[in-house]
Length: 285
Image (cartoon, helix red, strand yellow):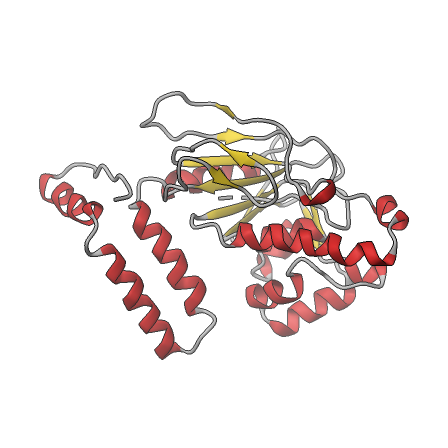
């Protein structure tokens, strides 16, 4: 996420918890590459990344992975601890005008690649998600937040506009008129307000550990993981592409995506498991 938030392209994530989890229901290959220059090892069914922060030169993340669970059949959670607070406004002041455009372009490219991951993504917001942090959350499929979380696209306060996809993804998430209101006002919402406008799917009372949204996102990921990997991948593709076209074209996209599941071994395994009254053992084939 699959979740949640991270890079504060404009505003730092001050001591807050920000997570990005990916319920990897489709294999990403023996060596897969995350946006930027970070290359990770083969993963199992889920990854959890904490504190995504774009570093200098457009690279992303610094520490290696660790695994909380050991066996292949279990839900495996891998994570990266937050190392810094993201882009600093003091850094921006030092940039020449000619440097700002390429810098924001790199952030935009990273967020776009997160949006295009072929697996469900969930953004879990336990603290601040302002500016680029919210833009990354918007690139995820699902967003959950603690009631005490704060989120908003605040760029107009700095005489700029959201540059990491915010002007495009926020209207698609909550509607054009309300998105304009929030961007024009640079308003910051708490979790309850974000839920009321449809910006997030779930809002939780924060717990003593400060990770209520993280825990909810992990629960959602556990619901996703047993499903067929190919089905999950093409379902996401059908939804994403279908929402950008008219209904007739969208139905044609759905038909084409459904066709990709017909010849798979997983489809036959699902039918056999149903017949034998057992849980299916999907392999993404």
